[in-house]
Length: 452
Image (tube, rainbow, N blue to C red):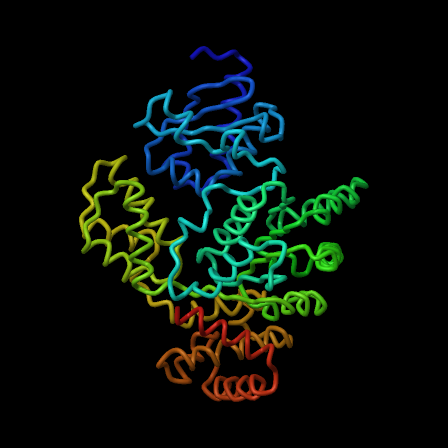
């Protein structure tokens, strides 16, 4: 393939931007191996990677790569005009155009540029006991988008459990049922950026038209709008307009509405007015099923014993499981290492530090600091600000609840506090929990996260 100087410049710019944005491990694993296979005015095909990473990229980096191609090659945003294809080293150039496409053919193309990822369907979501209610509610909304009993539908759960998969699945199912539906998917970060730019450059009316005149609005990770007053104000009115016009709203977050700190009470009330469904970490059987699905899709030679070991070891979320499989694939295909049980144990230790006990005082302090948005160093300090003192007492109470450590030992982890300070903190927090439902939810979520 002969490239013009401009095309070569555009491609190098694309590679630079992609690898600058990727984590070093991801860049080394596949980012630096991307090759330009074919280019035409309406289509770009890339390759240079194996089947496993081809599927991985489709599932996780669809928008990421496409947006950078559009910018670097100055393509038009309209998906019917610009198509982005990818194929693995094992495929021929001819069949790549029909088998592995990021953007589907015009027959199934996204007419509304709705932001949906075609790989996140209900069919390839591994549903288990941990996600039954959320999955059933999501499927019901997707099936009857114009007559849903669950509006809004609020799906919550920790990172990497499948919330984004389900919200895309709703959009894809709704579009399948009614092709002319106006659908809009966006992360709350995208929504926030559009609101900021709309206010800054006098284009807020365009932002409102984009989000308020749809049949189905899908907003991912709504917790990121906490503390963002202008965004919350704009989303509040967008929410009201859609609900009043009987339009469906689906939202995801990493916690229950009332656990999102610095979120306006009127938004909390509206989020709670519909169906709130939680996805919990998958149990052992579900984790095994997820791993087997991934192994079958990618052709990794992993035996049952190793699959069982991974499932028993990685208990947190699906994303960690996928990350482990990517690292196993890299060791196998790039370094030529056999996928033995010992190799997998080493990878688990290196990637996830799997041997460490999550219920350590330091981990508890870090989790409390993240939840309450204070610094870990402040919790361990002698600072007496009310917010920091409250966080310190919650961390001490949690440490006593989930570990077998004595009061004096716990105190040593908090800058050498004496045991009477820890006893007072535990007593005070217990009293507050009995009186404050919001605090009770926060502490319960912290303990649940540590237990999971």
